[in-house]
Image 1 (tube, rainbow, N blue to C red):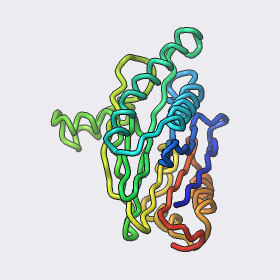
Image 2: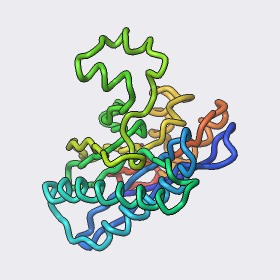
Image 3: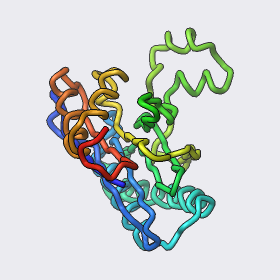
Length: 248
């Protein structure tokens, strides 16, 4: 298994509110995650860094080996981290409304446990087909999933893309958790929403299958987004089942 990640402020942003990391626990289970500070609030870069570092270092101390225990741990740690972000906001006035999205995955022998809040995304490359396996937590998707509006009606809303789930701001941190197959030759791609604003699925698929190292593929996803005028921070984290550095 290989892991590679890069992050950049993008073309039109001076600061980078994305944060990315990979951590392994005492049982050898890998956890990877991407957080994206909510730009409508101050302190987004603080919230995203807190989330990744706190989740990561907490995971490193565990001996968890099973998916059920992982799911329970994710739920509890999400609650704890949300409280930590809220507490930090209460101590510092300029951080009072800080918040961050989070997409997090724990890798098992042939499956992934995926958790997420917000519109940072998880994609799975399987049999040369790239599929988004996370659901963007924004206003339009929440209304469609609840059966309140049709997709066409929701798309017309003025705040259709407003993020509805995140860490911070209030006591409710509703992480969505699911399991997905992750088998030989599969590749996991975690990203904030910056890359997908400027690169389509076909382009991302081509880059992820380049005959080069995984690190260079992650770097090229960032570079391609910037060449296309990335208006937001851009982050790419790749996990490959393939141990060969330069094979597709």
